[in-house]
Image 1 (tube, rainbow, N blue to C red):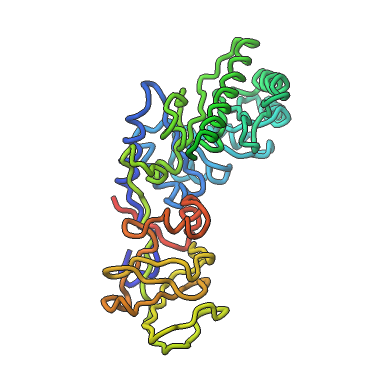
Image 2 (cartoon, rainbow, N blue to C red):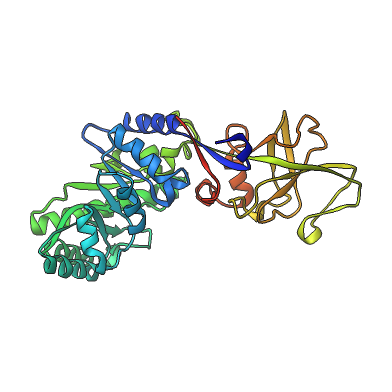
Length: 376
């Protein structure tokens, strides 16, 4: 990026993503496939760039949230299998088939719609069955008293014409959270998942070629649940490995610049709502980043950013396109200098905790007007 264009940007380390892929892959049992989750623009890292890297590195599958995300990858030259995790209206069945997408099926009614559309086209749609084992979101309901009906609906779905049932999966709710209760819940989800698969096989003789349930938390904490394929998301981007078990490396550094520096006397009010009042003569810097770039307004007056040789407290309400920091104790920082919002010096986990959220949200919130600069 031309230095004259510098305002705010996100530095993405492709070598770190490759390192994380290889580190995770090295833990998998022989024959276990690797699905890279690249939904939400690869958690803000750039779906096309990350997908190209994974395709070149030998990953087996990609996962996106919706049809639009899948089409973006195909238009960008990605040829490897792509699983759509969310719902796609059955009117787009031909688009799914012609682009060699794999569609999640989460209910019998949806399976019937896809079947009718594919049969009318004289083609087959590859699908993965989604089981709801306790996330209470998408998926065939099969817990408790719904077990028999859930199994029956799966059996009916995979037997429909025009459908090619390649895989079955579920999603864990608390595999990344510590504690006996979370572990018990995760293991109960896994048992239910395996019980449904066994019941389907017993009634039909059909065994799904790909069974997958290991999201980032399970890859890290429950290796016995790797099965035929794993689906690391946040882990791939270097977050979630708090214990450093896999030696993963964070892959995004969000950086902005100092637009101007002004001096205020004690009593001066800063930004909207006058929620910050200078308590001393203050050397105030204006940063070229705001909530329209992905810096949450909820962080206002509650955080600091890496600047110069230390940190600069953020002051006043964060605006749409800029925010202010106190540079009184950072005389070495000048107009045009870089300030790290999060990265090696400013831990994204700390920032997320202050905001009352998770790193996923901060990464995904980095808006598309923020250029991604890729370090090869």
